[in-house]
Image (cartoon, rainbow, N blue to C red):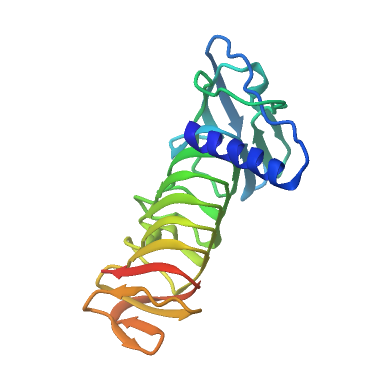
Length: 284
């Protein structure tokens, strides 16, 4: 994660030189002692309330297991006072936001710590995550997510649904820059629509799990390596839209022009993939 931040800073420096103007590059704050702060927020009165997490750089972990009646519970550990989380809530929404440090020159992030380890409650909620250059481990199985939106920058993310989502999710959306993302158990997410929009990077999407309804998946990506795993027996259709030539599919898939299909007895997954370059691998 620290390497990502350094690369971003170097890119900003090169851009400023190329364009002939100066910018104030970030300087890392002076770290102090580690602070571990408990976070516990009751579930809002309205069912299906929204939880918004805004996180900059660091390590973010989410899992089920918050106490009954609690929307989110856990700890934030940091050694820069300005990273102290800011919590706000209403009858319909809860927001947890990383404190903002104003960078001014070249940074040294070697001693900076910023870690959130949060557990989510079992009541229905809409979850939104906005993050920067960070590492994340999301285990969301067994929750009751009515919607899920993730927007991040240069990220290294592992996301899984080990158990079925307990309610129907309308839309699952992931927007990212140049990232390394692995998602497992996506059939358990119980979404109607899944949207992935990305720049370059490495993406592994595993649609194993219990598929309860027909679902539509759109993927728009730049120069990327994308690997789709759709287990044998799941009915699926994949349409490739764009000039992508590097497509590899296992023998269980039939090809007709730019459409790949797999027979199955489950509800169906319908994919529309837009890529102009990179590699797409389809496995069962």
